[in-house]
Length: 219
Length: 252
Ligand SMILES: Nc1ncnc2c1ncn2[C@@H]1O[C@H](COP(=O)(O)OP(=O)(O)OP(=O)(O)O)[C@@H](O)[C@H]1O
Ligand SMILES: [Mg+2]
Image (cartoon, rainbow over all chains, first blue to last red; front, side, top):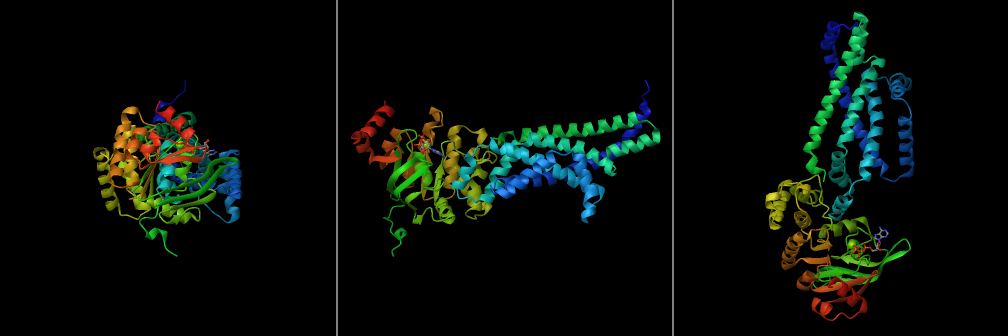
C-alpha cells in the first residue's frame, strides 16, 4: 500500500487555518440564511397571492437547480449586471440564498405543528402582530427547529468546499494546492475530508448541547 | 349624548341581538346578555352550544356578524383599534393555559404590560412578582411552564392576565384540562379574585363553584341563551326542560 503518513500529517498545519475560512463563511452564510429564511417565512403568511406565488417560484427554482450552478451565477453572472463580487462575497451570498430556501421550508414545517394557544393568548392580551412574531412565534419556532437548523449548518459547511471552484482558498482548495506540490492527492484530500468532518462533528455536538439547554423551553 | 361609560351602573359588558355563523352553521342565535360591574356570571351548557364562541366574541378572538357587543363603553367590530382597546381591559384564561412555553413565569407576565402598556421592565417585573406571589407561585417565578403542574400553569396564566390590570376576566373552562386534584387550587384562586370584586365571566361545569361564586348562571344550548337566573333559582327551580335535562346529566 502506498500511503505516505508523513505527507498526510504535514497537510494538517495548512488545512486547519484554512478551515477557519470555511467556518467563517458558513457562519456568515448561516446568519444571512436565518434572516432570509425568517423574512420569507413571515412574508409567506401574509396571504398576498402575488408575493407567496413569487416566493413559491423562487423556492422551486433554488431547490431544483444544483447549488454549484447557483454559485457560478453569483460569481460569473452578477458582474454582467454590474455587480462585481469577490469570490468570498459571491460564495457567501449564493450559499445564504440557497440555505434560506431550505430554512424557510424547515420553518414552515415547524409552524404547522405549533400550538396556536400561546398566540391566541397574546392576541387576547392585546399584543400587536409584529410583537407576536418577534416575541412569541419566532422564539418558540427557533427552539423547536433547532435540530434541523444545526443540520442545515453542517450542510452549509459541506457546501463551503464548493467555493474552491471559484478560487476561494478554503480547506479543499488548500488540499489541492498541497497535492499539486507534493503529488500526494490521496493524503491531502483525505486530510481535508477529516478536517471538515471534525468541524461538522463539533457543530453537531455543540448543537446537541444547546438543544439540551433549551429542552425546558420547548414546551 | 350621554356617555354610557360615565355611569357606574351601566353594564360593563352588553351583548345585544348577536348572531354568528360558521359558514352555513349558526353558532350564536340572537344572544343578548349584560353584565354589571363586579358581577360574576357562570355560563354552562352542553358541548358545542356556543359557550366558547360567545366569550371569545367579547374580546374579538371571534368576530360576530350581527348585533352589538359593547365592553366598557367600547363597541366591538368597528375597528381593529376598538378590539385592541377592549383586549387591554379584558383578561382571558384558557382551558389549556396557553402560557408562552419559551418564557419563564415572570417573562410570561411582563410581555404584555411592557409591549402593550409601555411599562418599564422594572415596574412590570415588580407587578409580575407580586401577582405570582398572590397566586402562590412566588418560588416558581423563574421556572418555565413545562416545569410546572397543570394547576400551577393555570394559576400562572391567571397571574399573567391580571398583570394587565383588567377590569373583566373571562375564563373558558379553566379547570377542565386539569387532573382532579388540581382543580381546587385554581378554583380557590378564582374565588379570591371574585372576593376582590373582579367582574368575571366563567364557562365552567363546576356547579359547586357556580353555586358559591356566581351572581347569575346562564344556560346555553344550540347557540341560544335558554335560561339565566341566580344560582339558587337556577339549580333549585330550572324553568326549561332543556336546562333540567342538562342539570340532571351533569349533577348525575
Ligand atoms: N372555527 C370554527 N369553524 C366551524 N365551526 C366551529 C368553529 N369553532 C366552533 N365551531 C362549532 O361551533 C359550535 C360551538 O362551538 P363552541 O366551541 O363555542 O362550543 P362550546 O359550547 O364551547 O363547546 P365545548 O363545551 O365543547 O367547549 C360547535 O358546534 C363547533 O363545532
Ligand atoms: Mg368550549
